[in-house]
Length: 199
Image (tube, rainbow, N blue to C red):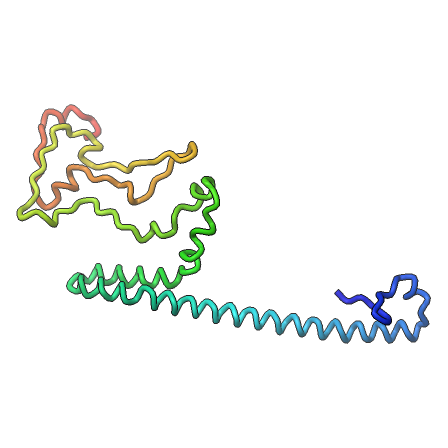
């Protein structure tokens, strides 16, 4: 904001009225010139701020890539023959680099219980929910389900109550007998299956 001044003291509206038309015109000319200079200066400041922001973002991305690249490289070497796992690891690496600001600021955003409810942990998106793990089996699974209810066969999605509200996510998916028997055998008491309408 530009304010006319004389000898370091701002000029009051009454003083402006008392000025000669010539002096007032000169003051308006100087004000218009200074306004143009201020606009140009603000434009340069905005350009510099944008350039600085882009450079900081680039530095953050390079730092994030430096931090995670060797970890991802180790996992890629470990799972070299599995193309889907390699693709997933590459997308996780790219996502971390893209969202590094949210990851860095995740602690400062959680100030209380209400913010935890509205904004769950950002890093949870990188969790893996292993629904069924048959890696220790030497043969096809044989599952006997004596209580073939809908949830026991199909599985379920659990919920947690937090401050009176119910919430869930992909880590709360629980397997059913059909998942556990995938690639093997599922033994059911036929009478119980027929008596349960949803089964």
